[in-house]
Length: 166
Image (cartoon, rainbow, N blue to C red; front, top):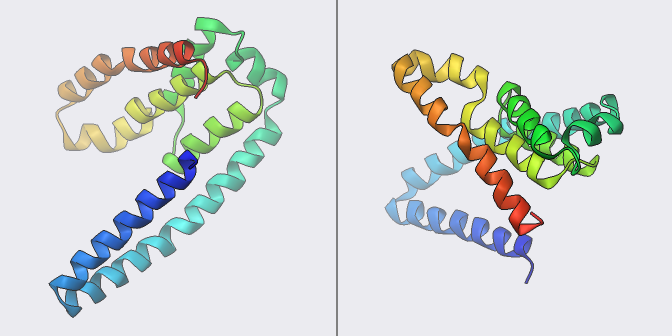
């Protein structure tokens, strides 16, 4: 059994399990959950489509030599550091961040560099910190969280180097 099939089975199994829980709580809860889930699905599909299409445009715009030079497997720790800065500077949600990471991998980016990019994006994307975290949490806490998080993309890159493949 492939990993993708296992993930699909787990995801659909969790959907069925939550649906069963909602069904057992009664028809009003079940209908409300179906309505909310359908609306969430309708809202996310265009974002996914735009992210996939947008990453294709990014791949077409950025020459492959740039990706292999800055984030390629031979770029070493400078490539990892560049990926960390690029990940932190990338705006957008997971559709954008993961799509750009996939494009970088397919265009010749090194696995450790792309892993560092995605982890840095997930931990401290600048626009998310400024627009969402600072207004809702004390700034001192947010900057402390970001400072403590700085080593994690590098640790993830080391793990990817040791493993040798994603």
